[in-house]
Image 1: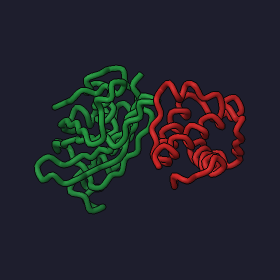
Image 2: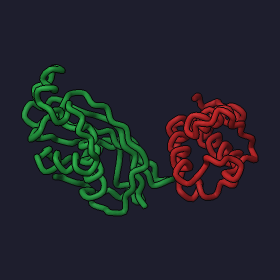
Image 3: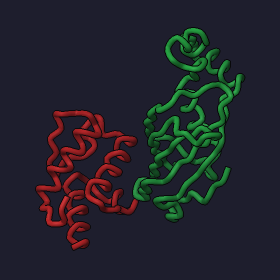
Image 4: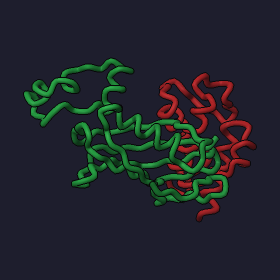
Amino acid sequence: MQNSATLNDVLKTFNEIFIEVLENEDIVLTYETTAADIPEWDSLNHIALVVAIEKKFGVEFTAKEIQSYKNVGEMCDGVTLKLQAKK
Amino acid sequence: MRWRNLKIASKKVKKGDTFSAEFCITDAIYTGFIELFRDKNPLHTDARFARSKGFAEEVMHGNILGGFLSYFIGECLPQKNVIIHSQEIKYIKPVFKNQELDLTAEVIGAYPSVNAIEFKFYFNEKRTQTQVAKGKIQIGII
């Protein structure tokens, strides 16, 4: 993943990660998606998702940041900002 | 055994940190495993059968190493507030009764955001240091 990734690129990559981690090919994320929209997105899978996202993008979140994100879009924003900061 | 601090919240755990322990598949562990899980497959219980398949003697159940991993994570780390999220193990060489094994686990990822630590680990036969199994395990600090 390059640092110049756009928000949309980030969302696409998130979608791939969610499909792989949650083993559900039918997942289609939007910026508004929350855990309530995806049955497999439970507390344990949440950890697996965050770990996979940190690995894929080479970024590190704080616990406070993770707790503050209200939906997928806010987390995508978080990744995008961290990638831009690495430039 | 030797341990270092494992406090992910204060980021004391970092990539490259290693932890180790020694194990031996004693007769008590072997027979206990069979009693508990009833896997009496002849590869594990019949020396003649095992030899006919090219092994020196009865091959120990691979999941005994899984038990060692459970003990390692649950009882040996300096903190008890741990939980295993996931693990994968690859068996490379057969293990036989009374062989002594060195288990080494190295931190390959620390994720303070979700209080998770990922290790790669390997079991070596103590005398020859031949690798007999390896894998990855992710734990959470709860």
